[in-house]
Image (cartoon, rainbow, N blue to C red; front, side, top):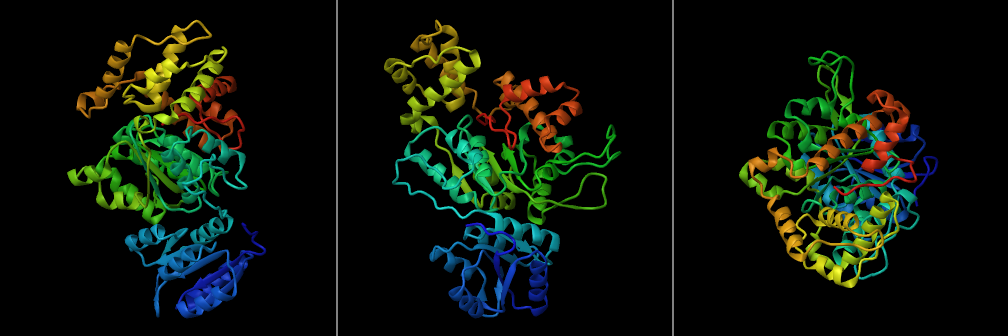
Length: 482
């Protein structure tokens, strides 16, 4: 159970007395109860005597490594959130600690402002139990907020792979470890990423979704890190970057595999150092974001080809989540079709059509290379061709030809990359990114965001609803597939 500052108990393990005292005094000023240890032996004695909310440990100790404590706590299924302190530049140690179960990490010399942020996040992070894969009931989180549960409910399907995805979401949501979501186009990668955010202690913070493939290369640095007035031609005011806008929340980097190499290097530094320097600024901003990224590409292959930095891949892929294509979970088709038809009918203002067994079997026999997005398009067309109460699919030969064309559009040719296969979807993504950024910079105040974009509030509401943009604290928020 998450503790308040007045009674949260923290154990600090460090062999340097001055640093140990500094951490202790900082935490005491924040209202925490603090115990300290100088080595593994003392730490183990205290852990045997007391339960703690947070364990802070240096990686290098006189009688071993701090990671050993994390391993032991995890094996004993204890609830302490663990924060490790590593030497400057030891990115590998930090990644290994996160993979080993650490909640978060700090690098020496420790920035006290960042230290307070990280510990506050650890104290406020809920301790959850994850359902086992053997269970067949819908995955729910005990005590989950309505936002988190709705985010899980949008992941429609009860196949084994979908249950595993939901269980993994609940497990990884409670740490700060970067997550890489992979899967074919249209499988719902953004839905999974958002569910991680919505079920984390950062759910009330900003959710900033970025389509990395949609930003011109010349604007990448300003978009990610912000810019000062006059930093470049046409820059008439200070502007936040994605990292600043997402501070205290989650930054979702969609299609991360499309970032050019030069920007990959700058992104790696920002993730490791948790600091960004806006264009035209002499100062760095400390940023507190959780990184979740996604791609339809096989990044390991991109690394082998030299198109993606190996160190960035290693840093992003601390936790990996692979979403199965629809053809590998056809048992989810009935539930998916029901949910999609309900949404399509609601938007069209008609009664929900019934999908008969023959039509369902016909859909199950298609390759559906575009996955859920393609299925939704097929159902949209069937509703449009129907009589308002029943669905009308095109002849089987035409359906198969359409799905083959959809599969062909996935071929990675330069011409296909330059010309969108789905212009409306491409334009919607562009508009969605702009609106999301404007909302994030105004703390999701729709009136202020509308004013900033030169829109009326009514126009803003219409666009938010049409593009299904999620905003924190909105009960009727809906997330669209990636």
